[in-house]
Image 1 (tube, chains in turn brown, blue):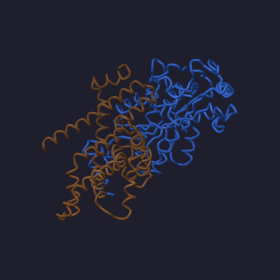
Image 2 (cartoon, rainbow over the protein chains, first blue to last red):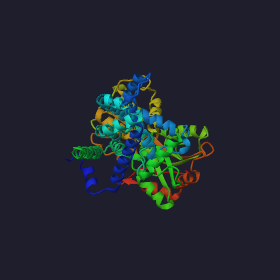
Image 3 (cartoon, each protein chain N blue to C red):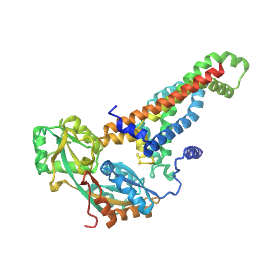
Image 4 (cartoon, helix red, strand yellow):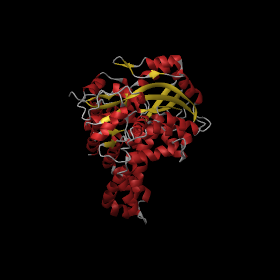
Length: 230
Length: 272
């Protein structure tokens, strides 16, 4: 384990700078998931249930936006939040808030697209019953989202994985400021450019471990929930 | 939209991230990858903070991009190294005043095996002519950074233009100094680097300085406060305090004191 020994030393010795970076990465990406879920879950659910002209086009667009290049999203958010941009007065560029916005935009299509598919599949099972009972559209949406909640955790994990792994957007809108907007991925990019490849690789392994831990907790929650529901 | 911004702000406040509106004593300095990658700011900024209580947030970009960040009003101070580009920035009215801060020099770095046979020379222009004649691989920053502009000026002095001629041995990577050194190492190529980044670069094995000491390799750094007349939100007082510090006798002494393995990386020359 020679390659990452520098990084493991930082982990073992409880290096405060490293822990601050890990904390920021988690706070930014989890906030982005929360924000994206707030938009993506109802949007995906509504797209699954509603029938309107242009629905197919919208679905194709949202599916395609799952592949949004982070650097393009970063650039767009940069231009929006720059002092010379339309939202410049808020002074949000180069702050964690800007990073949350960029990542939320990046992962909203992922959560919306996966939610649509999940809810649509479930809708096929529920349709006849709900039609017979005359359930209102809003109640249908709420029921389907609630009953699909365990599958939807996976959709949110997909979003989290994308957010935690990307570097292009947070680098541009956050600026990789030491102790303020430096995340795991931008720190890895920085150490690579300093030529300290072992430390960069080690930080990469730490990041993988964190993503693994988040997924493990989600899985644990799911198993726990399934047992309780029976 | 306004509701959404509030929601986003609330979300980040909840996570302990400082909202931008808070009147914290901090400024944003757009600077170059060489000052960050060489570790100068990690050394200098805590000294500045201890004296003034001001937090300096550094965005490390190439000189061209750093000046653009200043033009857009997204930084309070720019700290860069390409005098002609800085003077253009001043002429456009985006800066208050430009000050010399310090200098170091560029070095031509190449493979230890020295395939072009230019090692040990002092004449950078002659070395570039040999590299061109032998078609030895050469990595260019290609990112409008101060180092990139300096490199282009040297090729011009040599009467050559490998970038325009799309020479196959001339590779523009469009990345920072550290990345260019990594790439040169992997390709067995020559590359122009500022000495600060080279000294602090941790993956030197396989690379060595081929040419150094030419007067043409002089590398001047300058600092400019972004003009509050163009961008009213610029924190002029705090930014000016930073400018005053780096050109003060005290700040100059601090810059001279930054050493790696006994080697001084930057030589203060403010007001000279």
